[in-house]
Figure 1: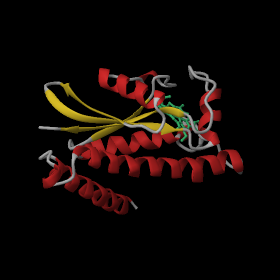
Figure 2 (figure 1 turned 180 degrees about the vertical axis):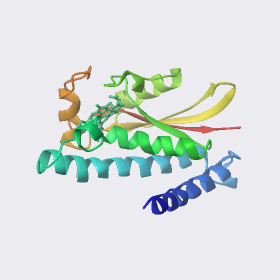
Figure 3 (figure 1 turned 120 degrees about the vertical axis):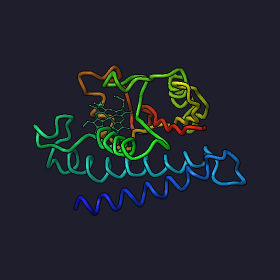
Figure 4 (figure 1 turned 30 degrees about the vertical axis):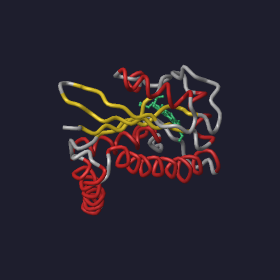
Length: 192
Ligand code: HEC
């Protein structure tokens, strides 16, 4: 099973690295531009995230009431939260490559660690919250290195998203509705 996962992860990462390798030149004619590479990564991430939420969390917790989802999923013998699934993937990618990184953030986070950490993240999260349907793209310098950064809206794609967030004791926001922008996915690619 582990071998299978490694093999799968290798395939996905290999494809992503191939994209990044060509994007490194920055020129569209030489390969995929940063923006397009980030858009493609986001599409995979957001699709996997929606599928897990709808077909596992929403179905088993709310529709069929078979199991709960909890941040203490091991102790509670529950499903990991969608945000945790997302972070576990991001951590595996961070271990495997420096070619890109990603995270799930919000201006109104349940977990304070998921608030914006840079000026660009704050601006991007505000932009996607205020302009539904739009993405945000920019560049920033962190620790002496230049990055292309993209921020994408993270939508409440299922009722489970809003009922859990609105009812969570640490949530600053309690009026979210299905379809709302709950936060944003940040993808970062080093330019040099
Ligand atoms: C069963 C509860 C639950 C469900 C379902 C759920 N979340 Fe969360 N979500 C949380 C918790 C708890 C956190 C904080 C987790 C952490 O980082 O420790 C979180 C984190 C987040 C974050 C990062 C900012 C923050 O609040 O910390 C975003 C954005 C987010 N969720 C959006 C969504 C969306 C969109 C969905 C549906 C696709 C969803 N969540 C489903 C409980 C839930």
